[in-house]
Length: 428
Image (cartoon, rainbow, N blue to C red):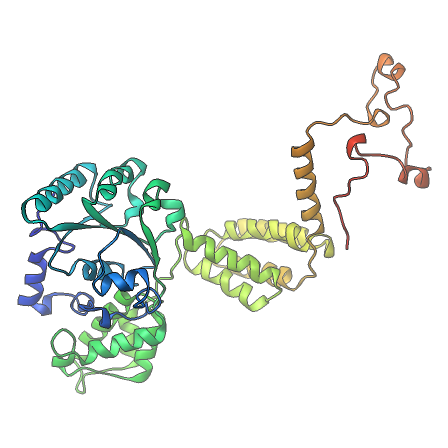
C-alpha cells in the first residue's frame, strides 16, 4: 500500500509537484476547485441547508456515496470534505486495491485517533468495483467511527453497493454539469493567471467556448482537457486565440455518456422505448442514434423493437410485428453501418403506428391468475379423449365444434369452472 506521500490520487507529493512545476500538471487538475464557492453545476447537492452543503461548510463529516457521471466533481468534493485540520485523508482506487490495503488504512486510522485525536476520511474511487466481501470489510469501521467513508461511483448504488453498507451511508446525487456552468468554468480557466491560461495570453472565441461547453457532455475534465489541447494549438498562432476550428481539433470526437452494462444504458433504452410509445418519431430516432454512436449492439435495439411491436402497438396495427421482425432480420443480414437505415425505418414506423397494449395487459392478467389459482381442472368437455375409457368417462362428449355451429360455440365455456366468468382481454 502506498504511503500518503506516495499516493498518486491525493498525495502531498503530487501537490508539491503541481506547485513546483504547474506547466507539467494537466489544466483540469490545476483548475480543480479549492473552495465550495468554486464548485459549478452542483448547486442543489451543495446547497447550504442540505446534507452535503452543511458538511462542506463545517459540519461534522458523515459517510456518504457520491453518485454522478464522469467529471461531475466527485473527487473534488471528497478533497474539500477532507480539507480540514481535524481530519486526515486516505484514498484508494477500487480498481487497484484490495482488502489488505483497506486493513492497513484502518490500522493507520486507529493509530492516528489514539495518538493525536485526528479522525480519518477514507475516499474510495469507483467503489462499485469492490465485490460484496470487500464492501463488507468497511461495515464495522464505519459503524465504530474509525473512518468516515466517502465513496465515488458512476453506477447506481441501488444495484452496485450492498444493502448493509448503503444503509450506513447517505447517497448524494451529482448531476451532469450544464453547458452554462461549463462555459463559466472555461472562462475561469482562460483568465486565471495562477492556475489557468491567463499568463499565456490565450483568448477564446464565443463559438469555440459554446462548442466546448456543449460537447463535453457535462464532464468538466473533458472540457478542460480539450481546452488545454486547443490552447496548445492557439499558442503557436499570432493572436493566440482559440477559434472554433481549434476547439474542434482539441475536443476531437466526443465520447457519449453511455455504458452498455451500466445505469446510463438503462436510462437511454428507457427513453427510446418511451419516445416510441409517445409517438415522437424525432426523439425515438435521436435515442436510437445515441445508442448506436456509443457502440451499442444494433441487434439489442432490434430486439427491443420486436418486443415493442407486440407490447405497445399490438392489435392496433397487426403489421407492426412482422415489420419489426423484418428489421431484426435485415440488421442481422446487412450489419452496420447500413443497418442504421433499416433501424431508422422500423423506428419511424413503430413510433408513428397506432398504439394498443390490450394484448399485453391481457397476457399479464392471465399470468397473474395462473400464478394465483394454480392448475385448475380442465372442463371435461374440453378434454382430449384418445382412448375408449376416457370417452366412457365423458371426456370431450359435450364439446361444440365451432365450424358449422358458430353461434352455439360462442356460448361454450372455455375457462375452468372456478374462473368461468373471468375476463382478461379488453379490446377497448
